[in-house]
Amino acid sequence: MATKRKTASSAAPATAPAAAAPVFEAPVESWADTILRTNFASVEQDSIVLLQAAGALLESDSPDKVSITLDQNLKLWIAIKTVLLNSDCPVEPEVKANLRNLAQYVVSTTMLATQGAIETAKLVSLARLNMNIAEGLLSGHRNRMIQERAYQIWEEEGRPEGREQEHWLRAEAEVSGLFKVQS
Image 1 (cartoon, rainbow, N blue to C red):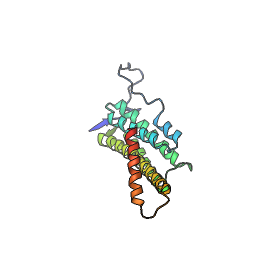
Image 2 (image 1 turned 60 degrees about the vertical axis):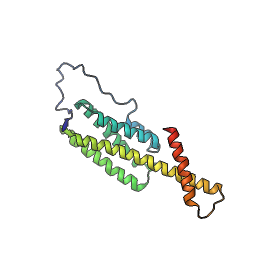
Image 3 (image 1 turned 180 degrees about the horizontal axis):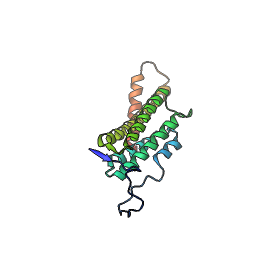
Image 4 (image 1 turned 60 degrees about the horizontal axis):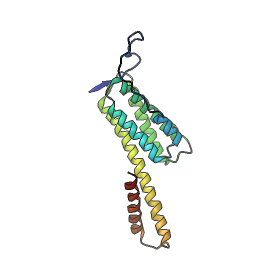
């Protein structure tokens, strides 16, 4: 099923009476603004933004909402692509390249939607993309936390040989406990 996207050519004439439909508004700080502010270095905030965008894409149930949400998601991914070009961005080079390719997919998919309609499957695809990137960010962050804690444990215990797995499992349990407390 295709959802009609409101475009300039499909918009109602300026002389038509305004409908009393509720207005779908973008967040106060746009998703793109958040990414530009964090420089893609705040895993939690960046993940939340991607998840909010995914939710909005999935909840878009009218042409107006689809149009606004696609525009906001497009701006989000343009901001991600912009931040990835910044030398201060802490993302690994290989991940940067992958994210730039995904950004191009989002731009292409959104541009196709400006031609009148977007398949519901494409909206879901964009939403899943955002959710998967958020999950990957959080997973990578969690693994770095475990690695840092395992190293601390190793140092605290006098750098013993052959106990890497024990240190890793202990660190993993501690970090998992932190995530459960924060949830």
